Image (cartoon, rainbow over all chains, first blue to last red; front, side):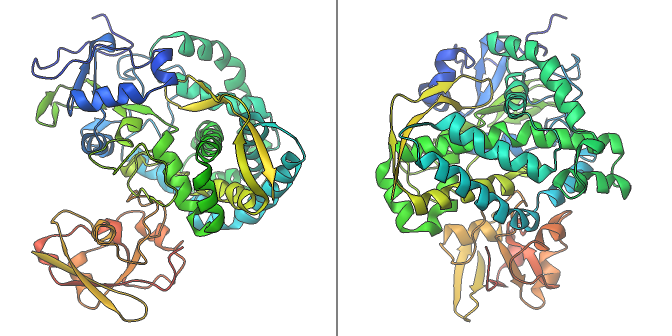
Length: 407
Length: 107
């Protein structure tokens, strides 16, 4: 059988609405809102012939499909390739690309290493680093928000939290982008990512070794779970790799997107400065509004159904998290960015057993940055056009020229 | 009909009607109950929807889920025998009349 993008071609039920577009075109990746609206409008389940996949974009169906780990599995890959039929480009993640019961074991180790209690112990370091960085940036007349702040902060604090002895900020950011481009189709983005994968991936694997980590970081916690027999030492190395693939580029994107939201909505920056209890809810609204992870997929592991339509075994289902997060059936006035919205239940961190295990540390990093900025920065002003960077799974900025006006 | 009563640390009570299948957390959010933050939205990843289940209701709400205890151990207020993450208690007719106490501190 000839595979399409590494999965079995699908003959959809004729009653399923068809959306004849390429969701991985640069045009859509740069400005996904019109596609997201078309996806929601077309129906609760849609067939996209270009990649022979099904797609969901309405909130209810996206949430239900994404969190139904029994019917719609992650072990066959969360991109277009079906790992059951085609060898993946790297050994699959043992937390992201796996199902229970194997997932339960690794999830527990990661959940403990990234727990709210652990994150509380990191907050002093995060805040101190944010102070140094923001003070330095306030001396400049203009900054490039992506490199100077969004990348600079996580690549300072996160490798330190993990306990990495080797730090290469560029490789750390790029590894995430490579992993996330890899979940897309065989397009230019994926091909360019695959060209860089050997070099960057090799560096990452080496940096995850136990002797390249301190004995007091998050990495050491994972290796100590191996000492305790909860996982093997090989699995520990793989989980440390997961810190680096899922924990750097994503928070870079979260910070960049937050700066973009707040520079575009100066009234909301004023609201935030006046009430710092809204800093954490503000980040949730940034996540809802910009969906740093815009799309992941699931694979039907047996014949199932979505919204009453049949979904055959082997079907790939694109879950457009970005579309769900802007669904007017779920969110009142979804196009408005409101720091006091408190959008509990947004899909930016996923849902269910695969919900982002690092979400507490992401919130901690954002809280540190935004708290320090709320104290020191009077205004965040655009200083040129913000440019987005197409990626097959991530909705991130490429450039964000800003002026930070001190108090 | 399923009624759930939320009791604040100061003793004030609010009784609301829940939809079957909703969690105690979701029901609190739907009714703007103070003290249930539910930052992670129900992924058992944050411990900000911690409640103490009152008296004999603990038998009805069942055992903690796998992994729930580790997260409760991270809650801001003390974990007690009656502690649950309210996102993990799904409401059924059998839980009509459920009473849960909201801890002093949630985040």
